[in-house]
Image (cartoon, rainbow, N blue to C red; front, side):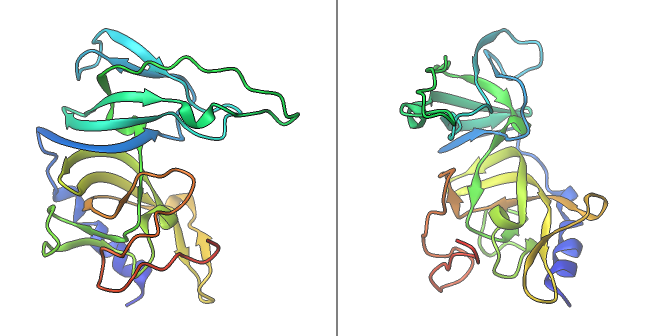
Length: 219
């Protein structure tokens, strides 16, 4: 059975994975690339709660705002310590310094589907346990390269529960190619191998097996 077919069959199991009512953790993340408006940070994890600040997204800046994820609850992610420090020396296409962006750096809550991160793993589990049944297995490829994180739903130690979309596959020549939008697979699984670095891979040992992690083609 092909890796793509295996991934699709396993992904069909993801809907049965319950979202924990509340979790706590700590790792770095950044706003979803799908956002087109400043990200609202709310006082409480609920729609309509007062907005205590916003985070900028998109534009000419080479890096996203980074922040610490401290936990999840009721479809929201608790964040703190947002910073735009990576863009301190950013310049535009003409070489002119870009203005500093206003960033809310305090604690608050943002929608679960407004946060993303990277994983150097292609093996998602039904529970935060390396011996738990697989929900998806990308056969040596990483979720980071074959798909996207749609939402962060929970966390436990080194594990993060995410909703994901598989957007790419390998063709008959072992090349990574896009999947037509209508054929893309969505699912939910617990992943480890967190790589909280936006611009590159972390080059750490693989969490999917005992062999050292190898960078995917083109890296």
